[in-house]
Length: 299
Image (cartoon, rainbow, N blue to C red):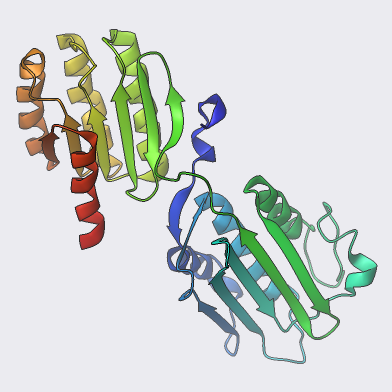
């Protein structure tokens, strides 16, 4: 379980190709004719990680390769991912740049404000940030470098445990978790709830949508009890429109047909249709997950 309800410890299923395109776009002003920057993500197309950190790692390593290129050679940067025997993911970034004396600099490589080539502008933050972020992700980094022959970075990303149930909110009233395989938020109500508990949970879910843009919600309502009119109207006028703006497309509701929720169900049918949301009701969590899996397969 994720301690402290920390949403940013949740791992997403991230396509390397998508983040690579963003990296190249951000570095466009530094690119020159003749530079070769080659990427191959065939063997390991995705990783479970924190998107902002993966983006920063890619950006800093490729930016460094450009910055410390060898003026006597046309720049060549090779980026490749591999799936290791233990299912960890390795990211390799290799360049043919200036390199450095690894034996002399080993203790300084990841220190703040350390630079190995003073003729190039920079603050010495790039490798420090890379190492800090890899440590945060529980990964490892290895370096090979030779003067005037280039540098190779090998980064290992561990496979996190149970990516389909990453709990980031757990109270007496509800549990909310992120399913990285489905890119869905799942909320399970535990008992009859108060208005404050209801609003607190959905404010957390909105935070999830703003962070991960999850297209689907799964809501297990069987133990929720009655949601009073004031909370229903707040949800329909505040939460639902904001969720749509953040990318919500479908809702799987479990137990919504029960008679105590008839008014709420009728209102939801109208409002989801108005917002273009597909809503379907199920009898079990397994059925709801299976329905959501169908969208992943089609996409």
